[in-house]
Image (tube, rainbow, N blue to C red; front, side, top):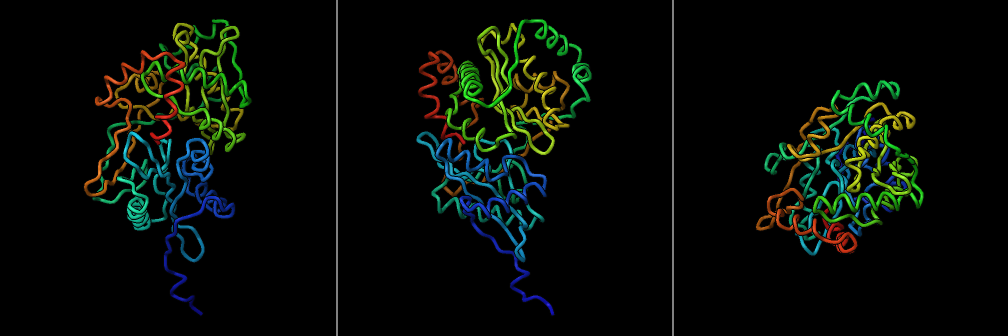
Length: 354
């Protein structure tokens, strides 16, 4: 007997991520469809715990089986228009769907949800976009490549000039620690906060890093480089489906002449193999920027990223890109702030960037 027609219809629903069963079902779908860690429900709920930005999402299903998933964060700020973002505080996380039709429907429903949530825009980082959305594919690139079979091969895989910098760093009296305990977290935040202040951007709240580490468990850790008893460079990484992903990293002023950042990323590549990784995902950078060129120097090829935005009629599109020309004067002023002041004010601003 044929199944009733209603069982063959695709149904679309906003999910409650506090439901463990629903979160588990979506997690399984993400892994089956080779999604990123930013598609995982635990990323969204960690962002909510760490920043206060609401975690939600839209699913499509047919006959009880998931056919699509769009992770979403409702991002609000005193400085910027409200936005529905996929995914909050991430560089990936757009629609995962079994067909372009399902993907377009999820995008359409996201615009309706945005209006109910009083959001001026929907921002998707990856995936498929409807034809009438604003699509940008030139602003950022991602860098990733295979890991070598052993430490020496990994060193030799780095292009000659950059390999020389790594060797200089390895000759310095630097110590490396890896973990996710209180000392690791404190060291990481100190290095990261100073690094972003020096770049002229506000630091994320400490609670965001804590929430991500707590949510990901063995799939996240912190690698820190020490000069004597002082942490000089540190990176918080995610490990997902065979890829090591250094996500939040930075160094103090002295890291440059010590080549601590070079040591940090090389040691992370070596450590990643012990985590079962076969790829190193260096993450995204603004096209043509200093970090973009730094990653190219390691032998990674840029891969353009495509982001899509829908903006409500009469609404304003957010500009939260810290490298935007609109913020050049503010960036210069921020660089001059005492670190203690930047660390107090920064999280209040950064928690609304999403």
